Image (cartoon, rainbow, N blue to C red):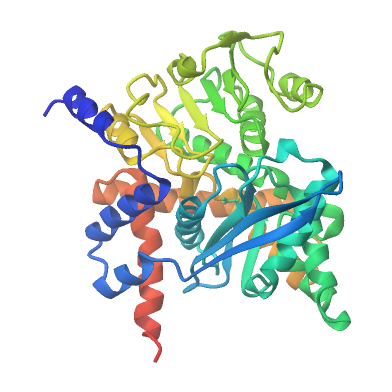
Length: 432
Ligand code: GLU
């Protein structure tokens, strides 16, 4: 079948969830490495799924019921680790898939962690700051001992931030016996620097995305100066990735957020756009030094590098043919689905997969956790240097394996991640 005929065929099929996507990625890598069938069975399912419904008093005195999730996929290598997101798309399917991606991400990064993920199904723009505080505290209380500094360690994700983590840490610590309180600070990472957070954790994910692009360019003997890039999502990850790329001489030419899309082929100044969004309720819409473009035209923008840094399932068979970039650097989790990826790879587009590309965040979290556990305070330059070293090692490992085995970077990353977990199971055996 020709590529175009195949795409038409795929378009007829119903849209699949994120879990289908991650399972297909997992199974194809598991086939490549001939993963032991028993371990395939274990890794194909999640260990624990916690769903909590909890009431919160709203500013007007009414009580609203919220549904929160925490899925713990696997802890063969250490405590469950991963973010909590506040978004209308949060459901059990999304939480399972995102938890699974965390297992591969922490394994690939060589961290002593497993994978977990969760969140609350809500649109945070509809709530006041004090409502969000009460929602967060009550959610933390509802999760109770299902989280813990040596058991499951949440972190920020979509629409959650250092403030959310400060509320979580405070609530968790307040519910411990007095003598244990401060020793539990590392129950969450991504806290504000003044409350046990790590200097530089805010930029760690975006910096990691930038570094992955830089390492990729180095392998191709390519200079980033003058290279055009587009960013989907101008939140923490998108902004910091753009900030570091601009510093390296690359030019931001288009941005899309939840509210609109803008383009300027002469360049959009990153800090200027950030200042504008701060004064414009966080939105890029009507930014005066760029042109508004249609949502569906965003991925077709003329550029060299495309950074999806928003939600999952954004690059699909619907738009993969339009993409002009030669490199996709996945700042988000699961932004490219299996069908979209197939088309891109056939067209010769390189993809730095999420579990490698955005792993700077969880590596930063690990440093924060170590800092808290050891009662230390690390300096920003120290953190950035450590991050660069660690991410370079990961990038080289994936790059070399993909060359040796003639695999795309995602499959190579999965193979390496799964092998590390397989080894732990083989060495330890299965209880009893
Ligand atoms: N939410 C981030 C991710 O998806 C960070 C997770 C963490 O630091 O635990 O990787």
